[in-house]
Amino acid sequence: MLSIGSVVLGVDDMERAAGFWTRALGYVPRGGEVEASFTVLVPAAGGTGVQLALMRSETAAERYPRVHLDLYATDAAAQAAEVERLLGLGAERVDWDRYPEDPDFVVLSDPEGNRFCVIDTSHD
Image 1 (cartoon, rainbow, N blue to C red):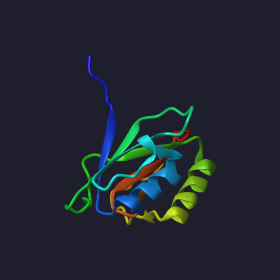
Image 2 (image 1 turned 90 degrees about the vertical axis):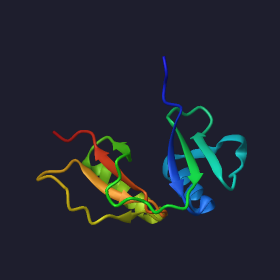
Image 3 (image 1 turned 135 degrees about the vertical axis):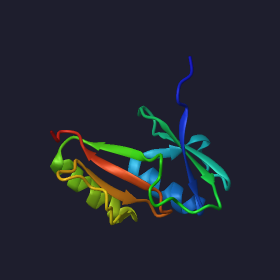
Image 4 (image 1 turned 90 degrees about the horizontal axis):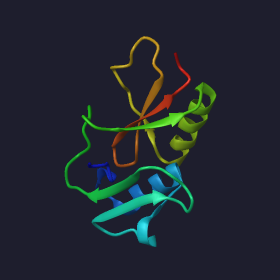
């Protein structure tokens, strides 16, 4: 049986991307070093979660990506706080034209332009 080992994001500036995602998720580079072409980020000691790999890419981030990250917040207040924290780390709000009537998610992009969502998991 297979299992997912890592989610991989294409990035242009490895140091910038690694800096953002380590602060955003509380992850650290596996092996302690950020490599120039491929870096795997893992939960800090004792933490759990999926590995996030950053791969050097020369293609631009997609406006409507087929695959993206969903980051979970426990409720609307936590979602709002996390969105503000992520914006402070360098994320940007995305002018998303596909929001439903009463969304449980906020679309952001990382400093590399990769889209991701912050989800209010308590939303009906």
